[in-house]
Amino acid sequence: MSTRAAGPFISLLAALTCTLALSGCASTAGQWQAEPTTASADADETELAAIQELLARAGEAPLLAAAIKRLENLRQSAPANRQVLIDLAEAEVLYGAAHARSRREKRAHFITAQQHAESVLLQRPGFRLALAAGKRPGLAAAQLEREDVSAMVVWATATSYLFDEGMSALGRVRNFRGLEDLRLMMERALELDPYYEYGLVPFSLAIFYIATPVIAGGNLQRAAELIEQAVATPGVSLLPHWGRARYLHPLMGDEQARLDELRWIVAQDPAAVDSPYRWNVYVQRDARRLLGGH
Image (cartoon, rainbow, N blue to C red; front, side):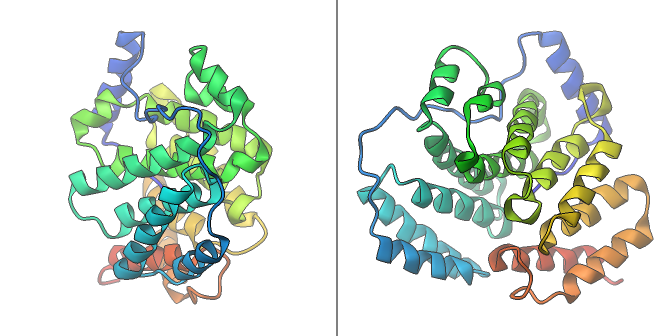
């Protein structure tokens, strides 16, 4: 649930492009086009519970696709239900990251996930009014509350994956500023609930500092501190360990630490740790890939 750093040339070019443009680059930070709605928020709770059981064991593409289809059907009858939208957004992010193959397919899933998360956040009147007054999403996030953290995290995850896997190098240049909204959104989430989902908020914020060049605010030391905070959060999540192994250790030049952490991830029981099974399966699959012949 993170994003790779762009190459040095692309990162520098992106930073210079945004600096020279003054008004900023086009943003990865969503469309924010959902209108206030009086549509029903009352979902079939029995069906939602059944879908969430399916999601809990959706480690493979067919099960996840089935869950997405059922959530979409449920959304048709309850388009304003926050939990349905959040579950759908998160499932779309995971499908795009773990199972979609082409950049175009991944981009479609990540944008869909953004839109569902945005629909949840726009239900908060203060946030909606701040956007209408011209504030960018990251700054408008000051109007969000603790109950919004789940949607904020899913939105940030979709945004980082969109930047990383859903765009070409030129697209990253044009959309670079969206990472700044990710940072602002996650800083607000860190204020609201630093312990959410076993360290997922500091881990998500660390992604900004890893992916962004120093000239635009990147800071590997700050990223390392945030990932350590995520790992130290009560409960056991594979995600910050995976992020540290995949992104931070290579940038720090610590190959042995990278290998040790990847081996630790692979050795865990995906059904026994606290992070969601569906994400654990994806993370372990990627860890095995990264280990290669080691």
